[in-house]
Length: 317
Image 1 (cartoon, rainbow, N blue to C red):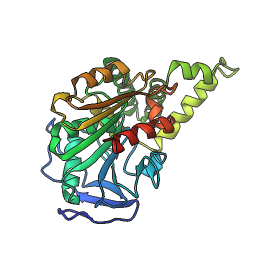
Image 2 (cartoon, one colour):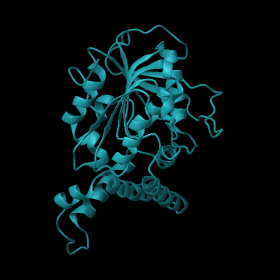
Image 3 (cartoon, rainbow, N blue to C red):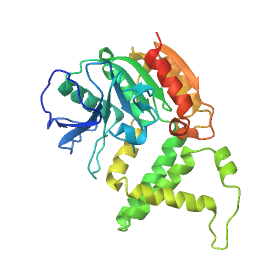
């Protein structure tokens, strides 16, 4: 377990590093941090250029598990060339707290200090992880050279805020009824509808309801919701969902060279919002469009397109 600053050193692939959480840490809201540790996993050698990698609120430090297409030997984030760091978003326990993407970014900065990493070569983030990356780049511009932000803007879209608010109220109602798992499953089902596109659902689920009153789409959503219950705790989910809607980044403060990626069918991070971000950045490198039926999930479902974008960010002049 690490608690003190140390020199960067080589680590085996996928080594967990737990860092004592600062007891005096205060979120923007004034809430204290319930976690005892900041949880990271290091891939490769931190003596090489360091890349921080982060995904949606359901992702975490196990980069090879949720983004194995992009992180590994010979992948876009090649751990034989870069030292890659993944981390678990706070809170790591099933607790409700008010925290923002900026709070997450400040915790990452504390973890980097403990690892002896003064400056990262790049932050590659998708969805919530890109929001935290934007916050990090604005809060500590001297500590980051490049940023690849996929499927995220500098502030949440109003329609997406509305959807997430309904999902949170479903979970809160279910908690009050003693049915937390059912509530979280329903919230995930609602979320899955917003993550994908109408075009994909029309193509994938053309049929109507059967004798039991359920369609193939209904069964798919229920299965996704029920599976999520085993992967996420309800109070932690409420904290992270609300955190998304606390995003507020001033793009003018970002000095890193920024590569953006947007999917035209994304309902959560609309392409118009990302285009607006691109116009506000002092050092925009590129804005890539990712044609896909998969909407917000394109960063998971379009590995070849996403790999090319990440590579252009990391290897471009």
